[in-house]
Length: 261
Image (tube, rainbow, N blue to C red; front, side, top):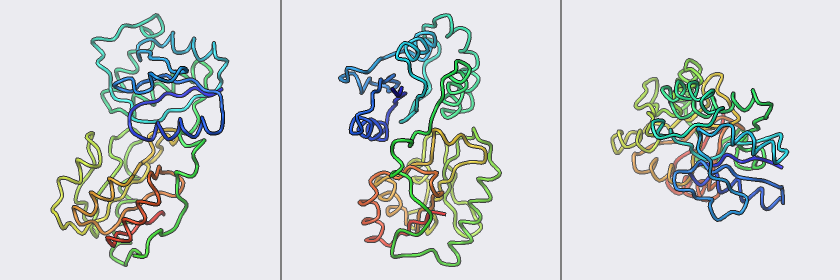
């Protein structure tokens, strides 16, 4: 039995589909904004403030492991109804919310750990979504691109694990754009149409790799073409790569490299 904390984005649907295919027993705690899993008989809609209810459900199901998939947005804390454990744990969640969405999930993971519940990697059942080291396109990074990649790696090694930045656009030794809380798409919209930069999405230093992995899909590549990016760089086995065949085909067609380092 596996417990699934599912939020928004297609990734949560992909994880659920794989678990169903493997015929693994599961239940869902639906943290999506619009209750997207309500038709699943194994789905439960529980407020983030009801930690007692959540933990009791996990133990009632005799579940030892859970995973997080999809975007879990910051709740409206002023409208939350809390149970006893919610009152006890909520201050730590509120403090985390001031840092960002990733920090909220990390605080929930710590709470679950305190209750003896293990959180496993979000791609535990979907290892095929994470690419190994190598270049996956006809176009390869040139010398200038390698300088850009080195600059990006250095930046991420200096960031804290709960910083919201998960992506950069780099050209040479210059950072053209940094991702904000609004995400990668919003960051790319700040670029000039022919930026000639490289999108680099890497885990931050000491980032919790059980959740919140850097993610790209076909829309990322459409935006890369729109703003004239030369390539996309991810970390080997520490990424979520959606729509893989379509992305590689699109990248080859529009001369955008995909490099996994």
